[in-house]
Image 1 (cartoon, rainbow, N blue to C red):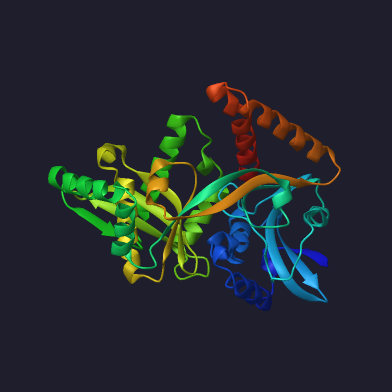
Image 2 (image 1 turned 90 degrees about the vertical axis):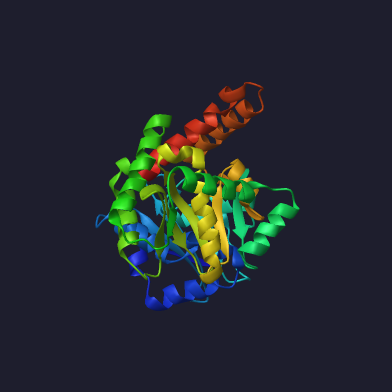
Length: 360
């Protein structure tokens, strides 16, 4: 097997279509982050200067048989679009077997870090250092059937949301849901809320970096593009209470940017908006809402399916691999100690450094 590295913009139309055809062969690959259009969008957002976005094309007998995107630095590589990339994986023909270390060698780096790798990726599974769950709402049978199934297993979240909606309309005014909003001001307000939240919680503001803002602006402006996104809004009493900016797969909506006005906090407007989207999906070409990873109560209660994702790294003999291996050993040792929040500090530090690397 040969591995060729090319810039996304150098992919031929035939190569892009082949990638899309391969992706359609497996339900777990129905993610906007696994489309060939994702690295193309990231390359555009990063600008004209070569910022290391590459597609590794696997070839057998001269034919392309698999694709995986990465952002390649001097010593390390990571997902193309990290930290905004919620899924990673190799999209390939069924008989393709990738040697992960051969991929690292082809990338010309000491290690490849992954953080949201599909759990069933055989090439990367031996290199995983931990696992998380991405929570999925499957409404293929319709919202009412889904709601009945939630009630049958003792989940009252949707009933509670119905009560909150009535309370909001009684106290603050009518609730108005809009799908595919083209209101730039509402998108700007969503990003303002996100930035205010980052500041209040001491997190890194991802929108202080230019390329994430360009990416979102490009996706918002490019209607009906191969990689598409949509702005969903909820107004209560004529005021914007919550806004979501989500990416679209073939039959999956991926929950991506979510925020709400703190003044409406008591009504859970972000969750009311999720409920509106799930109802709207009855008449839309989507059957799954992917809530992404994160152990949040609302995700556990709304989800009726899940997808495992892993984090870790693949390395070859190099200082970069030694440093990452030592960091994981410290992290794992800390996580086994009964020190409460202190045990999580090494993991948080690693994620913070990775986030800063991706935003540069």
